[in-house]
Length: 135
Picture 1 (cartoon, rainbow, N blue to C red):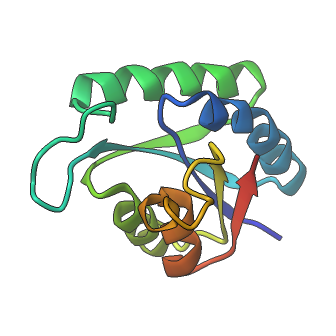
Picture 2 (picture 1 turned 120 degrees about the horizontal axis):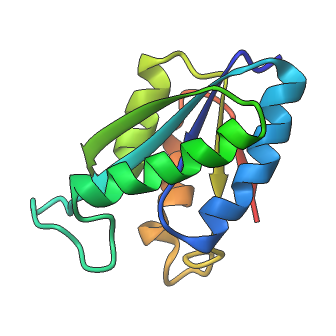
Picture 3 (picture 1 turned 180 degrees about the horizontal axis):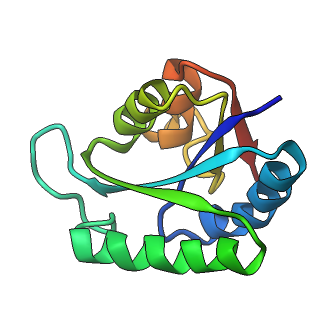
């Protein structure tokens, strides 16, 4: 059903907790899994505070998450990008012809005040494929 799955990861607890569900989903569907992490910049071109701010941080995160999946017998392809996460996630999903995007959700930004800032909300609205949100 889901031949190609995109799993965008960041260093948040919620993103990493979603990894277990992703492993089970990918194994049961015999899917190809892509891990994506984004060096985040604002639309102004500046790096945001508390974001994945360097290629080194992203590389370490991807290596750690790849190890998690390797322990569960899941092969992954690693992707690193720079930009605005919601747009990059949707662009990459389109590039790899993803059948599904799986994302962890912090629960932040799900109020009216934070909705426009939520990466998850933006991805759900812009995605070229279904999005599974793991709370």
